[in-house]
Length: 307
Image (cartoon, rainbow, N blue to C red; front, side, top):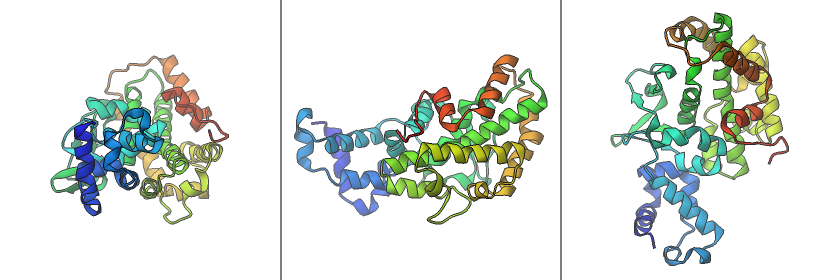
């Protein structure tokens, strides 16, 4: 028996109503707590071959939650273990960050400072909460920030025109936001009801019929919606259904900020990419489907038939 795993389970299950206040419970999230409730003490004394698949899955989730899985010990990510287990996209984006590769800073203003070229993330109060001295951020915020850091080399003085650099920056923002469409698909397809409900805080238009419930039941549908989203983002095309995910005003602010701030800031950073590499990346971001880009960048394959 793994004594520490058993003790962790006892601690969480002794007060399930308050389990989410525990850092491990925060990481496992509500779906995971429900999974752990199906275990019994006898599970921990079984040899591996005698455990059911459900027991093995629950123990794996518990083990994930107690790893030293976050970059700093002063914060936890709500739902992190749940997403690491159930979303291949999340797992691949956040594995490096989860093992201490990404410094996080938390500031008192609302939004923090966008600075992926420093290989770090700064979050304002709008993006985190504090409970009993422990900072907590939602899994979708963690994922979004680390996706930007995945592309940190584009935020530099690339040997391309300002317009090309601007398009790259805007398209990376499109990809970072569109990643939530894949997260939604992963959570729905693995029946992670509460984690999916938490993710549904993201769309601009709230309610049971939101962008995720309408467009993320299949990869084909998510790809089609993300293509329309790309047109609205890059070319300022007015597409009403896109504004259910992100408001027209917010899209305009992203484009303006990219052109007026990020391009100029990036020009101060030495480039790590050639002109050919930069333009090849720009072409991919302009033309490839969301799922093809996920495979290109992360090696995670999502088929349009839903597999």
